[in-house]
Image 1 (cartoon, one colour):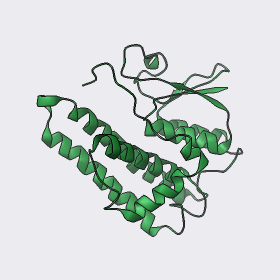
Image 2 (cartoon, rainbow, N blue to C red; image 1 turned 180 degrees about the vertical axis):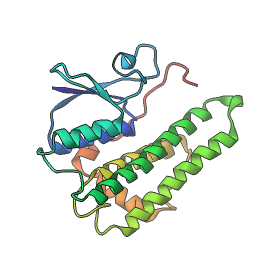
Image 3 (cartoon, one colour; image 1 turned 60 degrees about the vertical axis):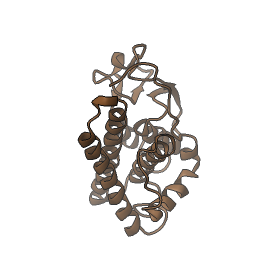
Image 4 (cartoon, helix red, strand yellow; image 1 turned 90 degrees about the horizontal axis):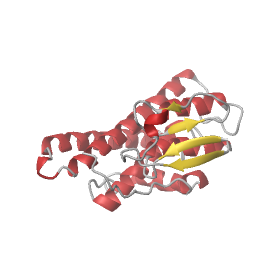
Amino acid sequence: MLILISATPSPYARKNRIALLEKGIPFQLQTEIPWESATETPKYNPLEKLPILLFDDGTPPIYESWYIQEYITQKYEDRGPSLVPASLDEQLLAKQIQVIADGACDAMGLAFFETGRGERKSEEWLARQLRKVYGALKAIDEFVKKSDGDFLMGKELKIADIAAVSMLGMMDMVERDFQLIKWKEQYPELRVYWEKLEERKSFKETRPVMFDLKEKVA
């Protein structure tokens, strides 16, 4: 059976978890905190990042969420829904939406750790990261407004939706638990899109939960 090493608040690993669930691919979830000294993350990924997908047949581990998503959608193309648009242009657009969503998550992660630096915190650096987050929210909101139905591309769930909703789930957690941003009132259509998909079974089962960091990170 596949093993996906994940962190509970991770929007990156959430994308892979949703794809595996949607395709009905059995996997075991292993939870870690990659910044703590006891982590086994470096054992499998030289970049010391999650998620990591492990195999039981001797296949080397793979890592980086976008690459794992590529593996899932291509290796298991004949399992469950496709999750990938049919045309090349739509496939490229779906990957562009993934880039925006992942970039927003990267920026929010940097902003989160910057707030923990106390007197050494750079307001300029923090503002720059939050501009990226709001820029991404605005961009995804535009895709929602152009869409026809519940999904960003066509009539079925695709990797673009998985990336966008995973990102929005992270933003909801950050807004609720840390008050770093506020976006739901500013983007009501985006909120409706997000809330509808969050009720889907694979999304319900993978909602982010913040862990308790016991060791200094930054």
